[in-house]
Image 1 (cartoon, helix red, strand yellow):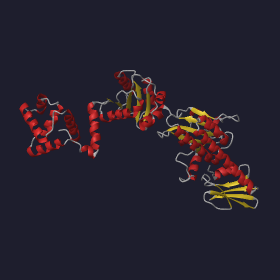
Image 2 (cartoon, rainbow, N blue to C red):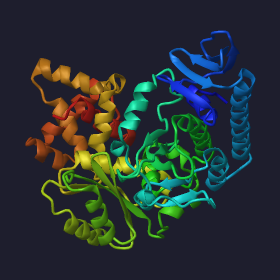
Image 3 (spheres, one colour):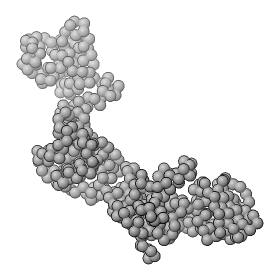
Length: 474
């Protein structure tokens, strides 16, 4: 386990010490006697005091011998190393959050809480000495303090930790209690889903039985690394997972959410299947208000803000007309629109139906937009045209007809399109082109001669129509 000058200062708390630390969180490897080393603490005896140095940091231990001072530091480092080993042994052999909290209590001697983002305490230490200070009641009740409410302590710590000294982007931080009349602190760590990278919970260590120090904050990095390892081992079914986290994972990392029993735990099974609604145009309305209105109106549904949109999973216990009527009552806001997926049964295919509703929303114009044939074809055409190779996959017959028309002032390109669109009906096609039936027959014969295409082949006809979508309709 690494040590820091902050941890060394805590280890020597019972000694008569004077500390001047500006970079006390830098990870160090050990102790060097009378020898300056970049990643070590240098220990030397000077008269009746022991001097410990690292860079500009210095701890002066008065009236103490070198051997006793070093042994005290080594005992602290050894205790921390044994704790870290035991922690990872538990994790790799299967343990709970409660086990991790109780194992950490022996190091921090303060109340430890694991809280999810729905304010539910998932695990907490059980300690006999002392009670949680009343100043922390709001933390225990609400589950966490947002990062933006932390005090100057966090800002100061950030200044003292350079990027190279951080063990990761997500580090534990110090913060003050909700009240200002009590001088104590806590350690907070924001826990993120290993799949969606969304914040899913918080680890809180509350100052109660022993003072929370910067050295304790450095030790907390060992605990938070262990929590990250534990989360990765439980990434498909971690206890922090809420239905909101699950929805994000289903959209962004669907390949990781394969266990149907996990899905059914958060989204109630419905024998009639589900429909996914993607709602936009109500960004000015508070997220919680939209979510509550939808879930209250459509029983059994789930609704969550995702980016600038609201995603709603609606069990099909009512008809489409009734569902749209309910949504219309909720979404009376000007500009609100809904993209609807096809009905589906398999929640592991959630990602596909989310994108289906997004296509309906993007290509449709009505308030309630579903996937219609023309919307699907426009989407296919746009996606094909984005690729330079896809754009060049149009049937070469169309280019020949364009060239012929340009040279001879003809309308063969247009004629073929309407002939195909009217399923080769001479009457309907000639009427749409406003030409005589015999003129149409002449043109079709000319098209066959120029292109040598088999218009009796259904696949060829389908290919030609799709090619018109890529190259442009007449």
